[in-house]
Amino acid sequence: MAQDEITKIIAAERKTLRHENAKKDYSISRLRDQIAALKETIKTQEDQLAALEGEGEGEDIQGDGYSYVSNDNDYEEDDDDLAFYPDEDGHEHLTAGMDDDARKCTRPLGTPRGRYDAHSGKFSLRKKPRLIEPGGAKKHVEG
Picture 1 (cartoon, rainbow, N blue to C red):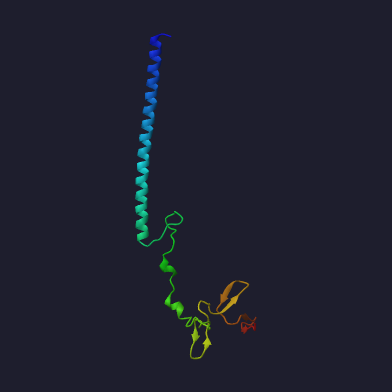
Picture 2: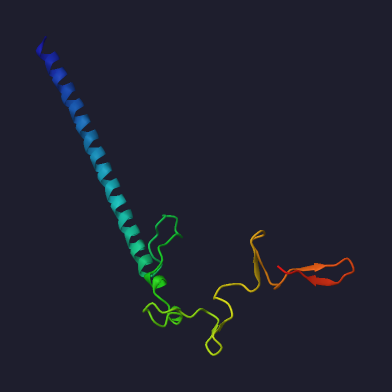
């Protein structure tokens, strides 16, 4: 091999190495720019999340924008609930609708008036079921 051929080969290899180094430097620079942009996005989202949590909306647990963990105030005891439990010493508590003078319970809190029909799963406001006789008269059925 002649000296000229060796010089050409070395020059070509250096050129190739320079191109490869330039490509690597460009890739590194591009990736650093992407990382900086992503860090800025993360910072913006953290600020938005902190603002939302500061407004008392809670923490977005599903990531869908409307499923938030409830505020701790939702779990505090109501003073009205304590009225039904005058003592915590094991004494019976008063039920809602209790008439203190007559000691007669009208109905528990939250219980609809009437009867519960287990077959249909509904409450009936009538006290007793009625049948209509063929003549049109209504008759109470004992039951």
